[in-house]
Length: 117
Image (cartoon, rainbow, N blue to C red; front, side, top):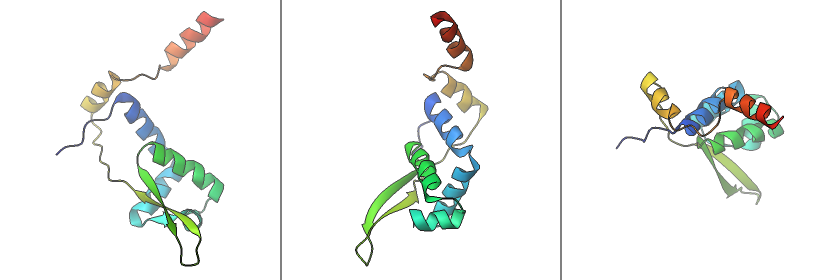
């Protein structure tokens, strides 16, 4: 069973998400093993606050998911893990995805701004 091709908006979100080096490092670390925020922040060398921002974006793109677990000492810990995904980026995929875009391109946004001025 093959995965359906992403819509234009999904492809834009996925590529934008993976286009950040911090998020790519976080995703790679989670491929190696699921982890909780504090440990993951230490491993990738960024603050927990910044890590939370990147994890939210990875989660919104469907690349990771989180699960609450209780540690041995009774603390609630949020563990993140990578969701299975596969995207084969081809010219045909880009052309097909473009037809389903709902996000206006820059020229359309500028035209709308000028019309409102």
